Length: 339
Ligand SMILES: Cc1cc2nc3c(=O)[nH]c(=O)nc-3n(C[C@H](O)[C@H](O)[C@H](O)COP(=O)(O)OP(=O)(O)OC[C@H]3O[C@@H](n4cnc5c(N)ncnc54)[C@H](O)[C@@H]3O)c2cc1C
Image (tube, rainbow, N blue to C red; front, side, top):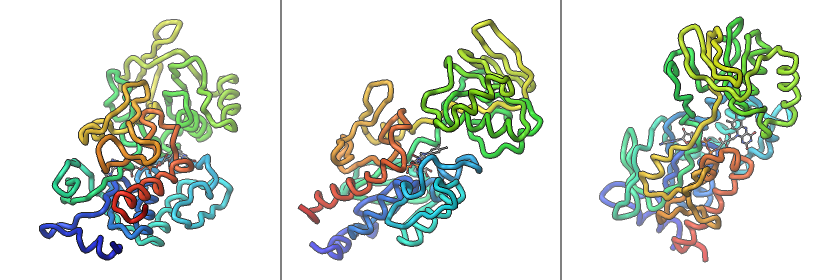
């Protein structure tokens, strides 16, 4: 069967049945679209936000830990000013990739439901309805922040996403967390004139903090220019204060803003609604075949950072770009395009 014949045969009742619908236009969803296009499969990529929506919401001044060549997809060269690109360069790069491959994108369209249908799957979005034989989920983990689950968390001064330091100049800031995001935010806001206190549940800064940043934060904490409470947690937030529990008892700190850099988790409810099994372990890893990335739900695949469940530092762009080729190969095999 030629690619042309495959495409011709996939129209039913006036609605096109795509060979594959990709949910999520992050770098890995885009890579899946590129592989589908190379294979002559009909596809579309649907995202609830803009192109590379997660990266768009990263801190404005962030620099990737990867060198630009390791973030490349679709053989489009990524040239950045420094060895490691920043957010602006990455946004520009992925826009260029989308143009180069003329990717079929549906942006600002949230996928609400995926359910089995006669031809495969019905995909219901905030704008329309589609049909596909296969589904690739590349929805990442950046949409649902861990909550502090304390009184006052809903106050406008409490933020789970950080963009830039300027608004915090001259302000009393509590940064919650001990991983890379919390450390980056504490250092950046401190250097732009904020009065920073870190509240850290653990007894030290996490091991996973970038090795070139760790001495910086440790030294600022040691000299006291960034204040810190280890083995401590927030118990209440009010308009002008924060109450914290420390090993030495409760304290009330004067406070203008709380930046809760406590991480994010994948949308497990969405996965479960499709019938995808999730391992009953600490990391809640979605169950899928390592060789094909197919889940327990036939013809539904997962790709990218989502594959790690709560272990959000297991897969990233660098090491999950390959998922695209693996999945599209499997789809081609199932369709009899390759042996
Ligand atoms: C601050 C920071 C720095 C990082 N630096 C690096 C680095 O240097 N190198 C590296 O390799 N990785 C890095 N990562 C990790 C990397 O950015 C992520 O692993 C990467 O974005 C994962 O790509 P993805 O395509 O799997 O998911 P994402 O980029 O998160 O894309 C998921 C997409 O799915 C969309 N979506 C979710 N739910 C729905 C729905 N229901 N309907 C429609 N669309 C939906 C989202 O809007 C989003 O656009 C970093 C992460 C952070 C937070």
